[in-house]
Image (tube, rainbow, N blue to C red; front, side):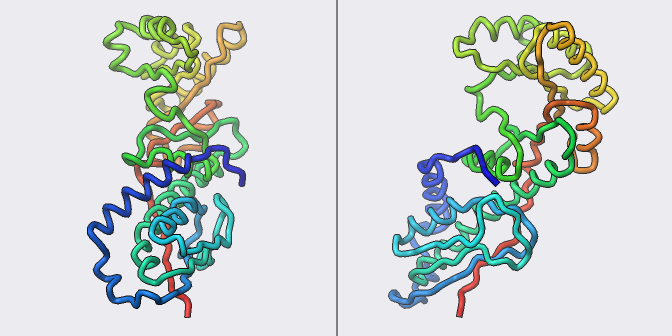
Length: 289
């Protein structure tokens, strides 16, 4: 599948540099067991069904260790792979390949886990208008990669950080005094016309935010019957040309209830667990005879 989000090469390189520094330290002592001129070919194999993600990080890991190492990918990024399927072949000096094995696998296992989980949610709500989104609940230093992995799974990005959208939450509302006051302040300090997102915890706040015609209204931990009522309120807003607010469900989302939530008519469903509760995919690297 085509992935619209791209991660800058320098971001991938920095991720890999920090990971190798952490793992190698002053040097891989086990690598001393390998003859310096020994060349090998190894194969990366999936041990379970998964959506593959993280090719750039694996390739960059081995590039930084030794530019003589070649990586030949056998499947496309973001594609679905079956158990025991060879994913790529890696050829080069034995000591360098084995030194980079764990770091390379860590990236692919993590990002493939995110992509696979996302794909399950996307498949579960197929046929509705809702879209699956990520959040900022990411592993420190790996946000770009994890959001890319969500895209590989068919999800869509939320804001990248604190700089590309206003997100007015309960503490902002408490300090400002009301949703209306917080939204007015955001509009006064928004020369770049950034999106304004408001988090509502009840229907009263929902009505206030809709009356301010914010860009996105995040409905936090709403029961499904309340989500349906909020959707009706949003429909009324649009009918009378009072705005075009997108409605987003968030909080307490699981594979078991996501379809019911999507069926209420919300536009977006954001799930923090996609990036903070990751089940790494089982992969292994095997030296070929």
